[in-house]
Length: 104
Image (cartoon, rainbow, N blue to C red; front, side):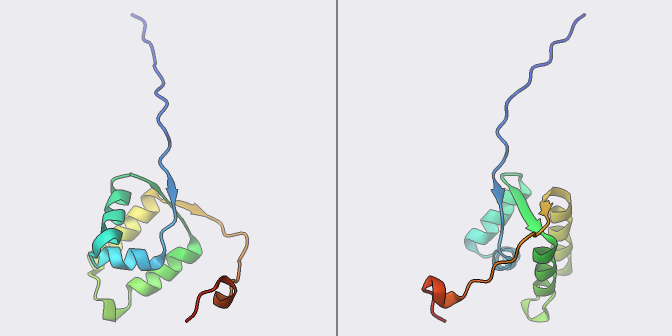
């Protein structure tokens, strides 16, 4: 009995970088960020992050004033470890808010 293997050309999921504020809002269950985080958990896109972004996220999520349940934080990092593409930052770019027309 011979077997035939058929390769399905499935498009790769889009690559997405989420800002720390989006993660915070998502874990607080707020609107579009929460839906975006749910899409990540369902594999709708590939999260792209770096050690620097993950360190910032850890620092922010652990702030007591946010009162994010420890289980939710652990689950978020489990998902990041398991599913995110972690890249190495090769360049840092400093942009002054005034240079792009943003006022404080």
